[in-house]
Length: 351
Length: 277
Image 1 (tube, rainbow over the protein chains, first blue to last red):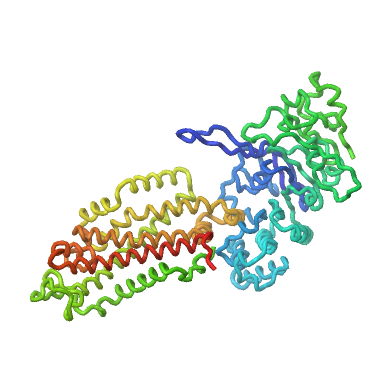
Image 2: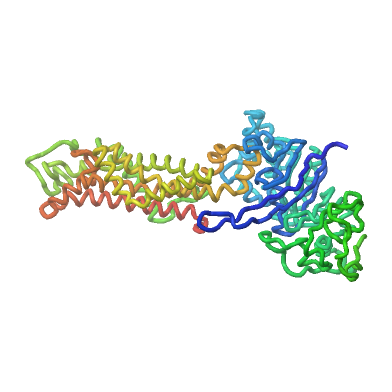
């Protein structure tokens, strides 16, 4: 098996909160707080979670558009943390970003030709006629008319703009594309087209995606594997089919129960979570999900569960999954302080 | 963001402002051909004469032709205000752009310097500089730019701070753009609208500042035709020959009013809330 394209280890991104006279750090927003994952070449890792869970921050930190506080990011075997922005510049053509808002991601004062030509200009590739040819072939690949190159972004619809944004991202044939909610700002009628475009491009060009979204159905459709984030951590990760068939973390279960099912016959058991996600400024002790968890145990308030490997690439950060863990996690085996029988009797809802 | 293209003389203020601007530039460029007399010509037999056939706007001290001095005064005010706005603009945009993009100590240092300069009344500082360096057009430009750049610096810094977080700037970073390219290709073109408005408002300020310095005798060298200098001369004869101060005063007021109205119209055109039909 070849080495994964992306290897992230214990990544943390904390934003200092300043205050007082001399702008001293009063605390930190722990937007990403100890995340580890791999992305294999050619696969799509879906990243889901509520707003504010840190998934966009994670996506941008992987591309080093944000400076990580701690941890390691390796892309194609190369360590990215510790490199200066100047050192990163030549590497940037290997990894790209597709943005959520197609209205904000294109410079309103540049024509499409300038926008799509810029990647080549920055890296000193393809000049003059050759660059024009590259721009034209990108427009063709995106299904946009060739005359579009002389127009400005405001002359296009949201879907067309997103195609231009995608064209810019793939212009230099990157290995990795982080798509940060690429369809959530688009009309429903356009969403499918853009998703299919991304899937086709992946097949044609062998792209590796990190696909950030909150629409679970679309993530299921595009992703090879899915990671669920809650308050700056990955709480569950599994191959797409496995996760949707048998979520093990209570948070994943709650998320999936919120997905509408287009079948009026099927009874719905909606798992409603009390309260709101806590502030990442002061995350709860122990498992950060414990204040909202229906199966909370005494232990959850004190200890933070590691990701227990459950086989088939499935892992969940919940003490309820500990019994099924393939090998002992870093946390000591079941201790006497476990929760009562009522808690242990909860179904693990395995498909 | 096509504010400039939407600007189509929709208000009478814009029309008036534009007309004044054209007239002013035209007068300044062609003053030697438009003037009935040479600016240094004197007519001692007709000192302080009322407006009449020989001297349309009358004469002043030593029989200088007021019309000639008003027309040539436009030339001085154009030179001074154009170069002062240009120099302070280049200085302010560069320093403000650097402060906004670099942030940290560079930003802190530059902005405190701006605060210090803004704490002084600008005209007082300009007076100080011209009284040290002596009255000359170059020194007036220098004195006005010394304080004038702060407005552009603040505005540019603010624009850069908001624009640098825009997705298209992040996209350029993600593509590997360096700070210079981002500043020139992405930040400044999108900050151009407000900066143009700022420059349009700064122009009448510079015109008045030049006139004030010349009025106080610390602007242009003595004998140079300038509106401020002519008003200064006229104040001595306000009761016997009010036209000497009146006509340059009117020229000054109309020009300043015109540019302020033009600035207003430009600002409205840039503002997306003012999208006229």
